[in-house]
Length: 85
Image (cartoon, rainbow, N blue to C red; front, side, top):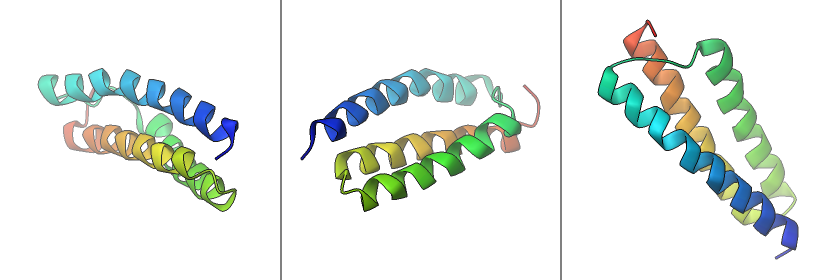
């Protein structure tokens, strides 16, 4: 394990923690607050970055980045489900 894997993982965990209230709020208020033009490229990009991390043998970073991608996918789905912000 390289130190970069740990640092990238920790930063991604902070990003994940920051997204949780947004997702919770979306379900609670039945709002898709994040526009598709933001959520779609973000979740696709995160999955691509996770694959790149995996090929670099940064396994923790890859795993945590996939979780971030899943959370952005949820924000994308909320926007589709609830239509208006």
